Image (cartoon, rainbow, N blue to C red):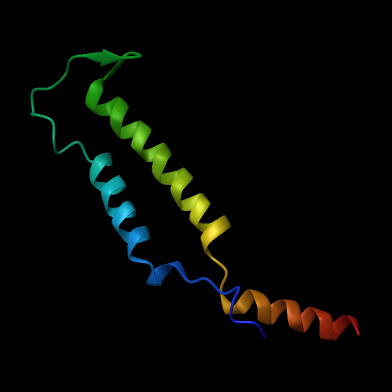
Length: 86
């Protein structure tokens, strides 16, 4: 089994930092309580930004799963499948 292709994103600090920043951006804690205006596409600005950052979070997590996550179990399952087909 090759260890060069194994990636475990839990050990990368930049992933966690970016995740934390996105989650902090989702929660509209940085707007005053009375902030209702301006409106963007019919939504208050804080609701619009919260929705946008929720979409960003979904895209980021999807990208992580597709591109940054390559753990040992995947390679072990591929080796088992090869042994079964022999």
